[in-house]
Length: 244
Image 1 (cartoon, rainbow, N blue to C red):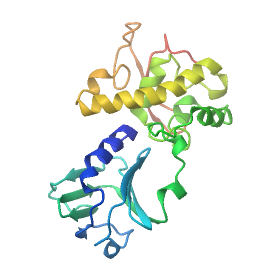
Image 2: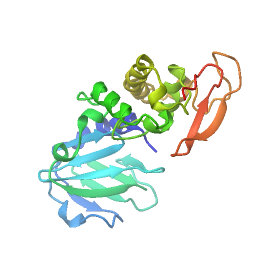
Image 3: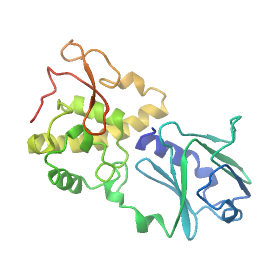
Image 4: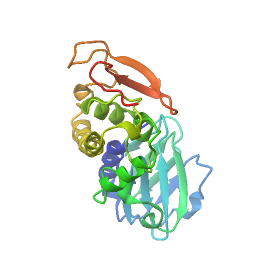
């Protein structure tokens, strides 16, 4: 599942179509009226966490790439796309994703302060929401998109390793200073993720995700499906403190 930084990369890549009218549209999406899109001008491309937004005058398309979604610009796969938008200067093809048409504007429906990569990101609001869920495990809380829009499992594992916190720690038991640093790292690492992804060097910088040995302790990592979300966590039981 693409995380927030990957959606930002897509948003930047399709800027050549911003302000352009849709010439033709096709695809196997059953959730939207494809006939509504031709001749419509793209007002903007935006991202909110893991959502890619294609904005028109009075409505917008919300695209979620789920677990295996993908896209191609000025190229096509043998399979039918979920949605294909053709412009005079090229085309955008979306595959294996969810596409929904929403009336109104994105500003009316999205809280940008929750997006860790948005200028409106509000760390104080994130901390307040975390404090309201003291019994939640931090491995689950970091994946809550209403708190950390854009944070996915890779970012979760990496920032927990950075701040030396065990993924099964209860949010309410984590010291305030440590919690503040974790919130700060969620944004810092997301932008580092973005740069490394652009350089095709993301995996080279992983210290925890999919790793077998802790570089700090030279001890084996634990791999466990943690929390209620049962997502994979890679962690060191020696240096990542369990707060419970």
